Image (cartoon, rainbow, N blue to C red):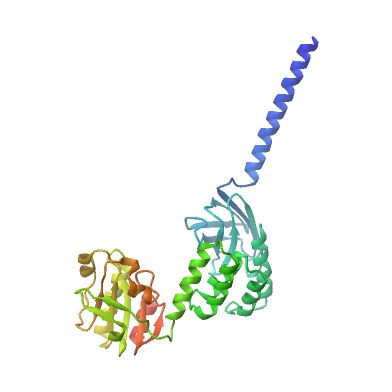
Length: 345
């Protein structure tokens, strides 16, 4: 073979070798990890042969609620990840296992399904810190509130997003403790000035602390459906149920009707202050029918920006606040727990 042809043949062989190697490496990378918009989660749990986990993100890192199927104690989950955040894996027994995720990365879970405090999540510094936190509470029962441990963690790791999760998980869910959560969130927000979500939460908790259980009702001035001025003085005596509703939220309007019917059926003497979050006056009027002439329906058309709602720490429809003699007796009750409480009130 002439030297020129031999050299050309060698170049072609080299080209195809490089091309095939590139294709092979691409396939290996694609098969081993997610692309830049997704995450991959692998797991192996002892004492769980098969089952399903619910998975969602409380901060919107993934958009949809999904399920993870376990077979032979192993599972794999892949999903689109919008931004860095928390993936909450809900076990069949209701326990929650957080995984701190970021787009384009892989994570793994390994441990015993009967003892989530010993479970290890691998992938990233935040999951390492959460593993270390779990180790500090490994010997405590499931109802233990690790307040001391949370404070210590935040003191040592003020820039970690794990602190945000711990405060939300332990101090702001179920029975919120706003006075304890407030300084912790303020410390985190100060150490993470670029975290806008944390700043908003810190501000909301500061507002909620002012209207927590046992606090005096806030000062407010609003107008009712007929344009009459209503202030906090009007509900400072006797028992009032302050409730928010909107015509576009069926559950909230149904809740107002249930409160009204319980009062009638149980022969209770409380009064209702209903705060409409509607933008349309006609819809506001037709959404509920309150049959006590002493009841008040507030309406100003400002919807979620309604000052009276904001003053009571109400940021959505369907919130009920029980007031007795100008003090907040109870709040954060919804649905059947609320109705049972009112029947015993």
